[in-house]
Image (cartoon, rainbow, N blue to C red; front, side, top):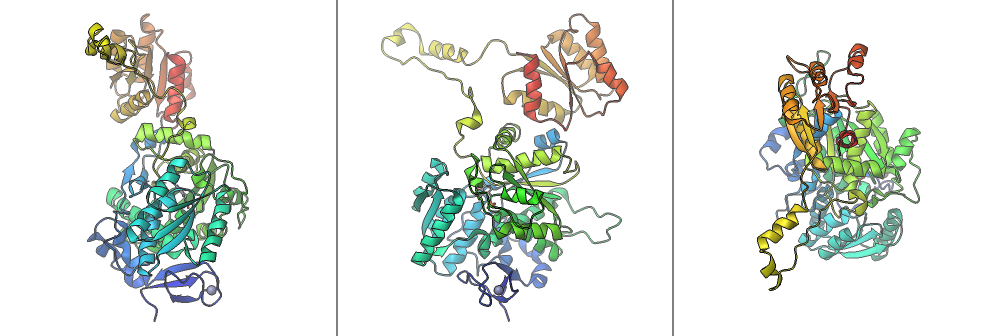
Length: 567
Ligand SMILES: Cc1ncc(COP(=O)(O)O)c(C=O)c1O
Ligand SMILES: [Zn+2]
């Protein structure tokens, strides 16, 4: 009789009792072990049981590799919010985008889950010293939990890790070993160090507690989506009953070694098996172009990924060059269940997504997390994601140091107040000095832009885009009649015009503007959800400066058009 949790060897299928320190299969010495539970028993009342527990990852302790919940180590891990990305959704024409905000974990990345479950499990096993290799976030998360648990940690960090992150690791009392080499090499060194000293080594995707920790993301998302969207609609062809929880159509994540998607995929598979969700989502694993072994292998339909020996990316967090068997398992499971895709984006696309997310959703993420959002933008644009799909993007980590290359020039305005000395304070009152200094921050006249749209959400989106960079004086009109009056009264420098409006539509507004010599020269950008007929296109010819389709442009693209027309 096996206990609540047991391990199964992926090579020979042998099943045996789980222990955090049994790292290989007793039958074949295989290293790839996976946790199994009595799903039938657990599944039938899991949703009822969890509903009574606080919303953190320990509400799923029945399917986690620990004997019990350890209050002493607890820092509020898991239970992160699922945030509706309204503005991003409007720009992409996909209204159901949700952000799983893993920045809100104790050390601000999704690796907190991995650290919390691992350290709890290792504490139960009496481990007091351990080793890991990391591109930053894993080391930070483990350092925090190891500090609470009284476990000495050795962190092998590739020298590519930003100095700020290295210092963050060190403040927790972890021994940092900076390895001037690639991440894969740092991993080898850590493994050899652990072997020589006979210390426990964190092994990522080959570690049962790590995979099990990551699966709680799938559990939480499924519970949260059911809460937000209600039960999955039952199609006439599908006569199954509504499931207690709800799976998304897509799960997006930035991928380095692939532990995250491996765990999340296992979570969805378990939930499906237990009847808590009715389908497995598509898993979209997004890599950075300079280090994309999985995306390359996927495109070529290879079972095994060819390692990238020298990653070329500024995003060191995602620099696993050799994903090994993790890719093969992920691919096999994607092909057998739900489906999935690996895609890559450039560093530049990731930095752009960082800007868009911060400016349009108020969510500042680190470049590695932005990679997932850049991938979403790419797949929506390519028509792979349908407008009606329910999409969850894992926002895996917070902004650390914002590097110069990401922000560009001119992001701050400098104010220098004259030093107050006994002499100068005689000359000008401090108040005058302040006002004079402030007058250098602002300029007298900002370009004046009128936004004409009958939908308040669309007006808010465009206002936000304009405010997010540069300064404009903004007017709004909510119908054609108001628009004509506003244009005559304010004579704006630019009009951003919707076409489909009740009573006086955008075409008639344009006619009226062009008839009046005062308003005729005002440039117009049409932003519309309407598919234009050739006749309608002709009507706009020569009347407007630019045409943009709602749901098909990002904030920076509209800004480029605006900047080209007003200075
Ligand atoms: C912020 C962030 N996003 C994504 C990843 C990719 O993680 P993995 O492929 O190991 O799941 C990492 C890994 O360190 C990370 O720190
Ligand atoms: Zn085996």
